[in-house]
Length: 254
Image 1 (tube, rainbow, N blue to C red):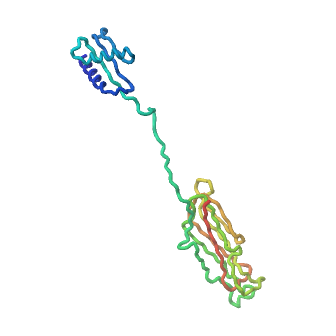
Image 2: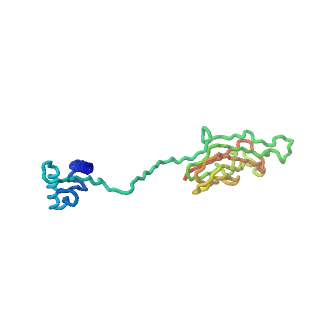
Image 3: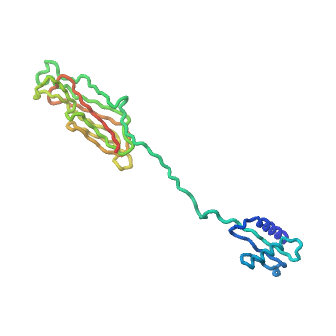
């Protein structure tokens, strides 16, 4: 019992330092004797507080004829609202710039020169083949970088629906000569459909010889692109001079 009494006395001494504004107040004790003879004192009411104060004073007096112990103090209440769980949500964000690409080297305008477009020039070829184009002209333009990081439109277009045009001022018999060379283009690349998240597939976009423009829409894609240009042998003979025209590939976000 002595060990327990010593512990209680320590608790009471610490409790005396508690703030008067404590949320949970301790103000109780006993006096008079042991066991059933001990009289309980409890604060919290008007008369209880008077009795508790008297018992507390008595418990602090070593010369008192009446044995007593008293505990006075309390604990500080919560600061804030208690909850059985807590946490936070952090939104992480950043913006990516829209970018479409087609690599064509040091310039967005390159000249593909076929050099001499061969004709039957010798007088021993006979009149039917004289001045006719000897063979089709073909070129493949490869780029290992093409695509766009958002939905986009790929467009192939010609500067003139007639194809390559010879602006000769010489004049000519249009029954047997023509001043233009029609051409077709097939663009081969790998792209998917707009709004679809999945593996892209090989795509062929064809600009026919009789068309001025063709386009296709895709979701974000990047791949190599090959432009296969074909200039077939025309049905009529060729004029002297330069045949020239533009082919444009354009990849534009939308």
